[in-house]
Image (cartoon, rainbow, N blue to C red):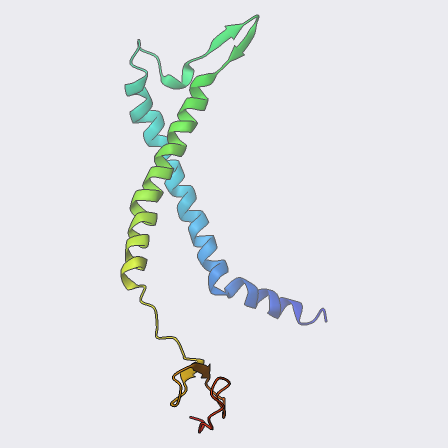
Length: 138
């Protein structure tokens, strides 16, 4: 039982979905770093033009406790940008492609019409349940 574990583990790792997931995580992490840099270096300075401050430095103090809301807003903007990019550049185009290519294959009929009374009967029936006519199988 233990002797087959390395081979089984290797097969698990080399399955397509595991490799695809690993690639997606790596690309996603790189994309996230890119978006975070864009938010911190380009977008939040534009939003935080109120003075020469960086938006991530925004905070307020209540009874000696400092609340740094600027970093949270940076992360919120990053999340919204990633979500928008994923939605508009991945989800929407894939949904359009799927809807264009989604054609219902002709269903394998499980019923047929009785030649005598035209009722729907099972494909393998030899006698109609409605008119009791003998029917050849096809």
